[in-house]
Image (cartoon, rainbow, N blue to C red; front, side):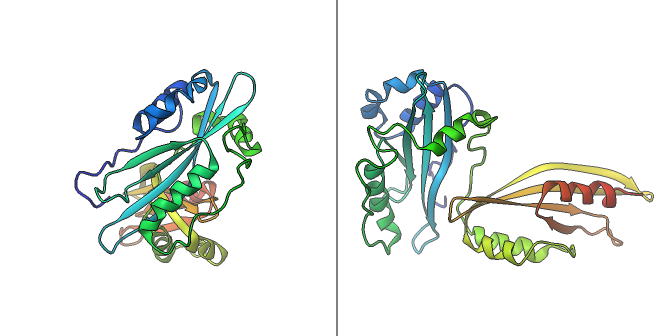
Length: 269
């Protein structure tokens, strides 16, 4: 965030003991103390899963603002799943990060609408049936149970801390600078126009001696969160295997293709 002194620390929302995840959620929420009694049963949860359900951002005109909604699922010993939502935003006049916890979809939708009015253009809150999935008294949706029971789900839940800024433009620049003939475009480029958040992580980097000179390459993953909630990753190889030794960028749609290029072609003597 652009405001001095803003809370920029990203809470750890995956891994660890479910009871600790619940405690952290309640500790950072402005209304966590009030909700603690109602949610005491979740202290016995066997598994926890969290993902980014939606986000919104604006660059101005006065300052940058952000809103993120996280969905937390807890698997209880009796096999039921309880869902909580965490609403995080910095749209208040003090520009500080505020967080709230919700047990029902209807209350969440109303709170999101109130927060989103700061971005402008909202016509009003959406109506959500009181007995809809995830509301108080409803245990779970099928997708929550699938996510909790998926192999490695507990360890890999919400591994990325997305940055909600210029994601579609970042994707456009990445594809534009790709020097390889088979770089993604077309449908991939069109899908990435709907990118609302992204994260960049380095996977590996290596140096090799090729034809008597040092050649280096690095592999990056560019993960994009799309407007429909799906994710799409592009894999970037930056290397110096060029006649001049100047760095060049190549982009691929799979990690295997990127690594194949790095190892078979860039490092090949």
